[in-house]
Length: 242
Image (cartoon, rainbow, N blue to C red):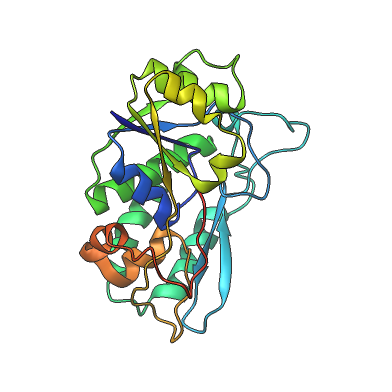
């Protein structure tokens, strides 16, 4: 049983889905603290002129500095959905698969009034999973009675509860995971070092580590194959840990 664990990010990057596709079980890390100005409510897209822009969902944080991801509320006093959709249209209208995905995204955005960041992120993640053809089982850490644990012990408990034989982890995990504890329970840690594959974009010079939106708009049904066949030896790109 290969298990991966990660926060429910907003319009995630390619590495998020690479790890999900490799796993037998993907645990959505929703009970941990929300990080401001991180990828739980924003991500990057790139224009044909190579302009990098953060798309985001505005959230309510005032007086809620230690709130869990699952508790974060969207600030719907802002017209953020139309702003986001218009930005996508401005950046990607000429992309080969724009019409295929934009209409579906637009319908999903407007299908209900999202108040929970968690609910919105999961709707988006499940949408992208479907488009990519990823069927990995999802569970939520908030349902696992592990809140008393922290750091390496928290990860270990989630792996133990779900009978993991392998834990898929980004290189940053080396800074805090107690590998011997995992090995004592016969759980192997498989270290991942995903480097964005070079794929067709609208801009002349490739820009790595964008939201999955960038790959889908430009490459459509070939997207999962591109993700899973990423060349991890590309020296001209910087690896991202996850």
